[in-house]
Image (tube, rainbow, N blue to C red; front, side, top):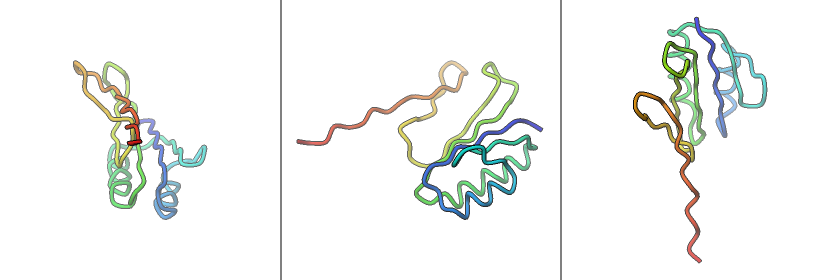
Length: 99
């Protein structure tokens, strides 16, 4: 079992309902729980199948340098990158509109 956090944005209500079955929604779109790897993988499958145009990130405790790992789904300005064995987040700037 490990602590898991899921944050969603603009996902359908049916996905939010499914997440609430397995995790506690502590704020709108923010879910936490202590679940097994198998349940975590099942939840991630549900996210990838039901998120539609929304996006999500899942982070969980694990035995790494940082003490956690994470994965993302959907479009977001924060993009995961690997840097010398560490998982970090790169922030993609907003493109200026032609004007």
